[in-house]
Length: 369
Image (spheres, one colour):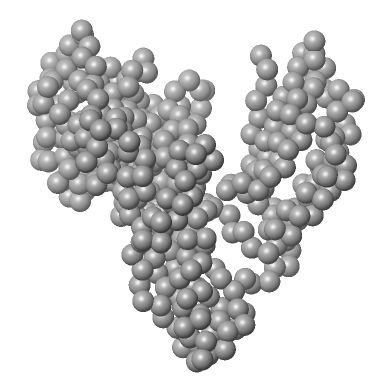
């Protein structure tokens, strides 16, 4: 019997010749400083604003467009091992209105003009803990399970999990580096949850987050979280689609949950995860959706509508343009595509070529057994 595969392509068009848009943003997510920071700029001349008479109009436009400019950077924030914030917005767990209010309420610097008065810019910061607070819904912490098995342990002042370096990925035959998220989990080797957001007092989770990230084992910046005598653990594996969850040894798991004082550390959120520096600092990966982006979107949509290939969806998503091809059928037990599928695959190829020579693509797929 022929087997089928579904393929999802996310791509960000980048045309060879692009006109600089009047509004631009440079955003960066820092898990060390626990904030999303950005510099928003407006090309006054490009926006058709004449100074000095249009000074107020320039400042107003920059302020009004702030949530729109920063939206994609926030939607790309990792929430947990399988979701970005954009996924939660798509599912309705968080509304765009809530996110816009959060962004609009961020810390802004007074706008400043370049010396030639062609650019007006302002800085903008939003705490990652404020983003996480939108997602804390529990009213009381859930207690960690008490296993029957025990190991020698004692009370510690905090928990430090060293997840630096390339680690085996649980359930896969590869190694990868752990990444930061708002709500990582800790797992035992048999995939018993050792730590997750609902175990943390909700007031702590909203104000401080459930973990603090660091890159150095001796960093004094998190001494206030884990104290002077923390339990130091080396992660054995990493788990999750986005590689956010350390897997610890069975013995370390029992050291935590087998002691009442250490279980309280979980409720108090006294957990630090050490990651490689490059995992803690980076630009927001949300695509820039300028005029070229939407020109490509309209051109591709027109081509697909004209050809009308079966079982193909095309849309604009927070990750970029999304093209989903359902039920591509293969000759049984081979990698050969049925001849009847060639027509619509050619249509997809034509559509992708319209994205421009510098487009970036991400391909996801899943098959039947």
